[in-house]
Length: 359
Image (cartoon, rainbow, N blue to C red; front, side):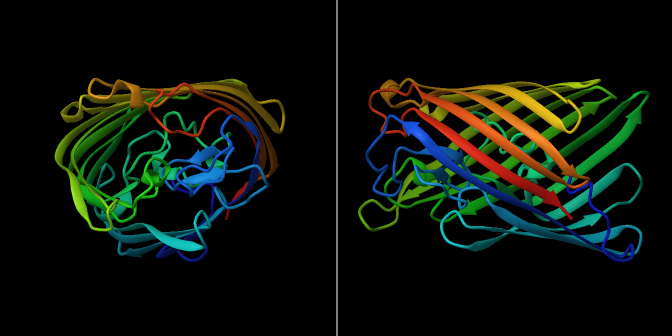
């Protein structure tokens, strides 16, 4: 799904779409009262791990507000080029190239792509920036957010219909190199450059009229460079990572269930992380209230006191303003249960409001 609710702006050979989120939020209270690495004023609450977006005590629109523009140019019936740019203000106003890929569609089932895309780590990865596409202000952060968001490489995707079920699957390969990694800013005082290389993965999605199931697996190598002493020093080289996850979503009449589970296994570090989120909601006219529980747990046999552990309880309310615009209100209670040697954000309660649209 990528802005599927929008309409083409011109003829079939050129398609222009956009999306936007205006989100504001503030930390109501929190247990940490000292800055995190001198960079983030606290008490604070993490809203976007992947881009290093945190809310503080005062109202702010920077952590999650965004504007995206996407266009696709078709060259005949089989070839197309797609680009997407997203503007954020997390750390100053910046535009990022999220998508830039060529597609070849030889028939109604197969699509081959080359270029820059979203790395399909999670169910919402492909359209995570499109806030209108889901009922929360943000997907549960106990599951979502890691060092790599996009990748440069190749994808082979297949789709078909099996009776009442639709099937979509893909295999992909590539790499992603980041400079001054945004997610690492939450955990390190010094700049970190992180590369995911030799990425190989696959995902499979099955759906009928009320149930959607998704499975994914990704394998890659990780390199990391640290700038603590002012010079670029490699601290991680060719370390293996295995990622796998499952999502199950139900839409039954007015009731809905959203659930996702993921595991990041870095056995070379004796490290493993798993995140789970379960949400229940109901559509009541133009309103959709939801209750969400998330949990994140790490294990590290080499440094057991430095692991991150947290639980999140969220109450969210979505109101449909029109065919392509929604207003959302969300309250999050974050409980930091991390190891005593991890200098982390602490407990917090966050209130946020967003206006999401597609055009």
